[in-house]
Length: 101
Length: 229
Image (cartoon, rainbow over all chains, first blue to last red; front, top):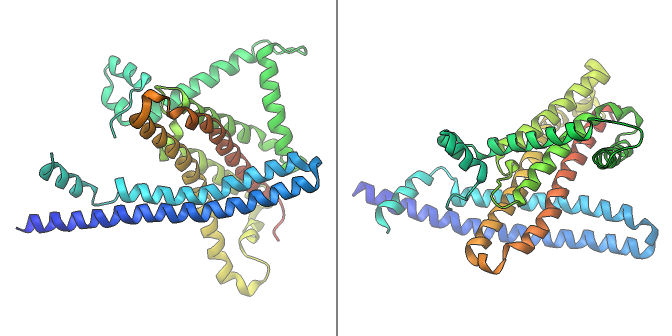
């Protein structure tokens, strides 16, 4: 009886974690997409005004994009931790192993 | 996620060290990358002459390009840190690229490898600061006015710790995410060559991540070398 209540609670926690992971990475990708779009817009406008600076502007834009991408990657790592590596992982795996196929 | 088929892990299984090989594939593949880089570098530098051979020419292009880029960021006084920066760039780039070969596992897809690359960079930043400024290096952490020290000092310390975290997690997340996408696409639609466009993007991602690691390390070195605000 105690074990089953614990299993149901662990399952609820897992459901909440996976839902949070899905929404978290979606919101992060949304913000990252807007920010990288603004960076690319400025880079393209700069190249259009002054085509000779194309090399430097491109390199600077790539560096800026990589740094913004890293913020989205942090959110991805948190989402992966929530799905695969959070502290209840042992209890939840046992729950699925015992009660499932 | 099922365990992928890795060549060198199978090789270690044949020797009999299969538990070690299955638990630590990133260590085995970092050895593979190290042996590959040492062998290629020894071969290219065997007969250095003024008229370069093909291998020497390739390495000269890579190293002179890196050095010119680094000098453009640090200035002439930063020429002595070039071996550290070039080594970390070539090592991280090769580690990322071997992930694109089928049957190989990129060592940087594991948090331990990226932490081992990021931690020496940040410690070296402090060594440069102490070497250039001595005890006055603490002025870098104290801000412009004396009465803001209780606020500025913890923020600066946390920002230095965040440098280690950001360098580590950025490289790990990019390469591990790339591997995950490849594995999922392969299990979904492998017969239709679905992972192939992701691999083409992967060459770009590997180079850009190694380049960003190099650029951030060089900028931290420059920040430690120059005078405080």
